Each structure stands twice: as structure tokens, then as C-alpha cells.
Image (cartoon, rainbow, N blue to C red):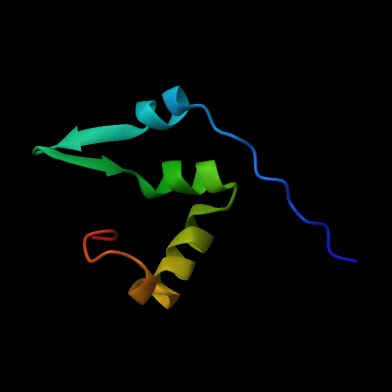
Length: 61
């Protein structure tokens, strides 16, 4: 039987602290995104590459 995973509500402060400004562009590190989603960084990157058409053009550089 599959258990449904109840998503946790992440406070805005936690997310904001993981947003960095590089050369005037706001970015988040893949490791920080993976942590927020509760997955390993390599799994996040793998899924993005497999489903790149679902993301904005500047999502993954």
C-alpha cells in the first residue's frame, strides 16, 4: 500500500535564506532545492534533465 506523503509547509524565512544574488540574478543552489524537496541532489538533477520541457528556460543553467 502506498502512503501519501503530506507536504510540510516551509516557512518563507527558510526559503528566503536560500536565495542568493549573483550578478544581479536571484538563484537557488541545486543542493538547497533538493533539501527543500527532501530528495538527494543527484535525483533532483536527474529529474530536471528528464523533464526539462516542464521548466522555464532559465531554470537550470
